[in-house]
Length: 150
Image 1: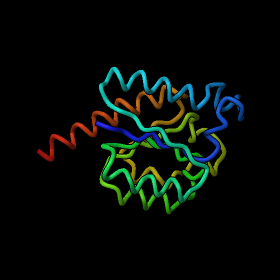
Image 2: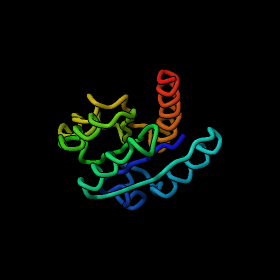
Image 3: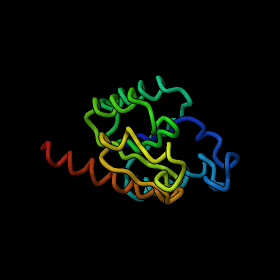
Image 4: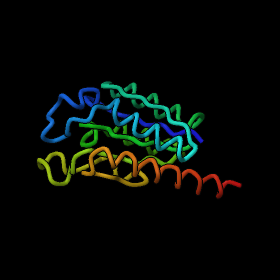
C-alpha cells in the first residue's frame, strides 16, 4: 500500500517560520518521523510539497493510479481553494486533512476550511503528532476500502 503525504505552501519553511505557532520541527523531520512509522505499518510513503496550487491539484489527480490514501496539509489554501476542494472530491481515495496548529483557535479567517467537507477527516492542533495519527488513519481507511472492493 502506498500513501501520499502532500504539503502545501510555506510548509517548506517549517522550523524557521513562526516557531511560536508551528514549532521548530522541519518538514524533513516530519517526513522522517512518518517514514519510521510507515515501515512499522508496512506501507510506503510518497512525500510531495509545493507552493503552487496547480502542482498540488495535478498531484492529487495522479493519486487514483498510484496511492491508496492521501494525507494533506493544504496550508493557507485550506481557507479558500475551491480548486483543491474539487480535486479532492474528484479523486476516489480517502484524503485526511492535517494541520500542525489548531486552525479553530486562530484568526477568524483561518477557522473555516473549504477542504473539510470533502475530506475523510481532519486532524488539527497536535503538531507533528497529527501527521502520525493521520498516517494510522489513512492506513485503516485504505485497508477498509480495499476490503470493500474485494
